[in-house]
Image 1 (cartoon, rainbow, N blue to C red):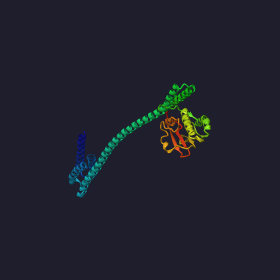
Image 2: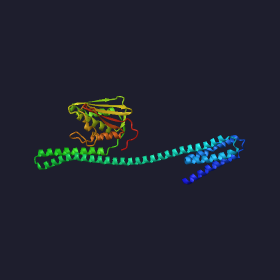
Image 3: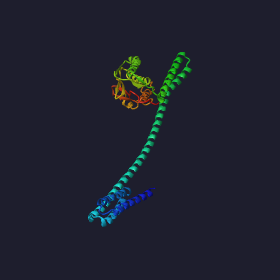
Image 4: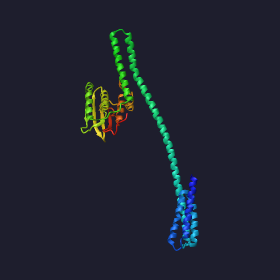
Length: 360
């Protein structure tokens, strides 16, 4: 197909030169302006040949055009010999320059094509590598979850097994009652752990409603007031009175705030202050829970949202990962600002109005 197209283009150039030469030959000598027009028309096939076939095609066509022009004008053109040869030289100059520029553009286009193909190959390879990394990350996370769950389940199971053995072998009713109490306690602990794990593994999609965040925070502080008083912790709220309603799942957001506040209280066994502030920043809700406890050790900061990571004696290590997941489902983020030795601040940032329903 390319060879046939080239042949037709060569024929077109030849026909063009022939038509111009014939028109000029048939034009009377006294019509000088028409001779001037036909003289300029020779440039079109020269330029076309240079664009299509490069500098070789441009020069070859220019030579043919020059010979045709010189042969004709040598007999009839009134211009002097110098002008005729300068015009013929211009044909060759235009043909060669057009061809050189065309060849350069063609090489650049080919280089860009090769570069694009190489980039596409690199992109595909990168995609494959990313998929491998994602798959490895998922397998690593699954292994981490499995190991953490097995570790957390093993302890209460060992307590249940030991208490059951002692209850079976010990005839003392009081001891049996104590052992049965241990079994009941550890069973509840196991049930709570499995419930938390299911909440993390299969989170419920949020049911969005326009919610007054200030009232939501106040309700959480009422729930924790007794626990805070027993721990000698002062809990206070600093809401923005101009804070508008936020589109969210009130139960899930309440669960997150409650978890953060309880964690802050438990981090201050010697007492302290928990401050919950809420305001809007650039169209987003910014809700912070700050405590004046000892802070989080630097080596634990990066793992604070990892499943089953906990520094509590009886913690499951799923509270913060579940909270992080809930905020993500609301299109926001939960971040930790470790304040060194003066406590830490957890901050929720999420849109005050959801653009669309968040998928499960």
